[in-house]
Length: 79
Image 1 (tube, rainbow, N blue to C red):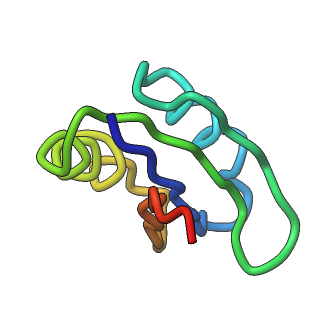
Image 2 (tube, helix red, strand yellow; image 1 turned 180 degrees about the vertical axis):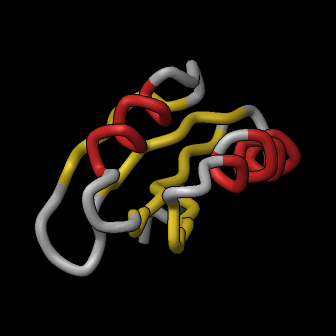
């Protein structure tokens, strides 16, 4: 299982609509509306990178009110 954090910028005024839409997907384990450069941060759990690709293609890229995303894949690095 892998985790990723997706930082989302939304067209102004559409934050709640996008927030509710991304929360519907079972791969989204946490979702937060945040202040700052990004509007929403979600934590996604997927079995592999292919499923993360599908999440991006089938969910995020189909929501027209999303202007930009940045995906951070969580590391297992234990220094």
